[in-house]
Image (cartoon, rainbow, N blue to C red; front, side, top):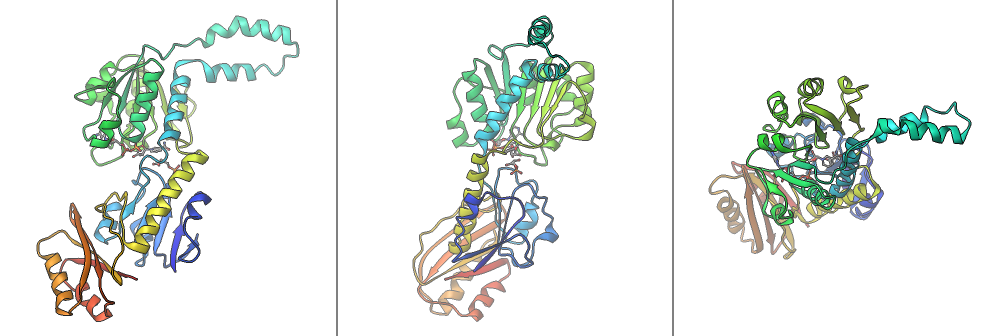
Length: 390
Ligand SMILES: NC(=O)c1ccc[n+]([C@@H]2O[C@H](COP(=O)([O-])OP(=O)(O)OC[C@H]3O[C@@H](n4cnc5c(N)ncnc54)[C@H](O)[C@@H]3O)[C@@H](O)[C@H]2O)c1
Ligand SMILES: O=C(O)[C@H](O)COP(=O)(O)O
């Protein structure tokens, strides 16, 4: 029985995938085998020595100390693309809010609660509605920074709204490139995207190199009257730079899913409480994906959609399986296999892959192994952890 610690509200549809024969779910346990979470900020010290895997029901893993997990041989999984449609729809809503007098118009109408005569009210609204006039999105240029699961969906939707779309992504994967409509014009650098776009939307992860990426220099370079949308992460945008650009009129509006106190109360800012992925559908998709990945890892050692381990899946064969995590250095696999050979244990099937400093092997054996043999493998210099999966 594997114990799964859940640290956020995870959709029932996902939790139900973890059958009660193999898994026990707990909101509080000191010795979990795996952790399932959403945006809970996890510290290294919160990860008990028993933890074998961490599943993020969502896209961003910046709330998880991934490098500490890698050092400890713990794969971290996420749910790529599972909430992309939800974010896309909210960003389209954001574009509408940024181009029309929707919020001010609604507030104005609600301020008329003292009026009792419908005819008088209609007359007043017809007179005042010019204050809430906006612009159409069609014909304007949208700059998309980060053309992965979310960025490519938004690019597509914006083209369908009649917008011109330009994009920047220095690390575009082959799959993402296939998904991208050819009408999206690829920019050589982020500066030229900022200089050309009427609306700019950010859809990249927070990494060392993207922290504070949207700074004074970049915003000084943007088209006057530009509207910036941040549904990616707070850390990517310098709030001081945004406030300066708004005050100078360089930016007309800032719309973000990541409010901070200094943004509250400004008319040129629209704040949402991190609800990009908060739909029934996205929460279910993410939870199902994360739960399935954790389940397959704990029960079979298979790895799919890890952000720090190689992806590796092997059909089960033989009588038991060894899952070995080691440093990606020469001779490791040979040393492991010679321990098995010296013990006369037959290998039925195996797969070994590496990613950066980590290597991972699944080895299916013809017979069960003793704890002494496992200890021998564990003691090899460079081995991080070994699991026997029956
Ligand atoms: N507001 C929300 O609720 C919400 C929901 C989902 C995701 N997110 C955020 O959005 C981010 C993107 O999500 P996704 O599902 O599209 O991820 P993704 O991995 O599919 O796409 C991210 C893209 O950003 C690109 N990228 C990396 N560095 C870049 C850089 N310096 N400049 C431009 N592009 C760069 C990558 O190459 C990749 O194509 C997540 O990391 C998360 O932080 C927020
Ligand atoms: O990275 C993500 O997937 C989003 O920020 C969603 O976060 P949430 O699961 O806490 O809503």
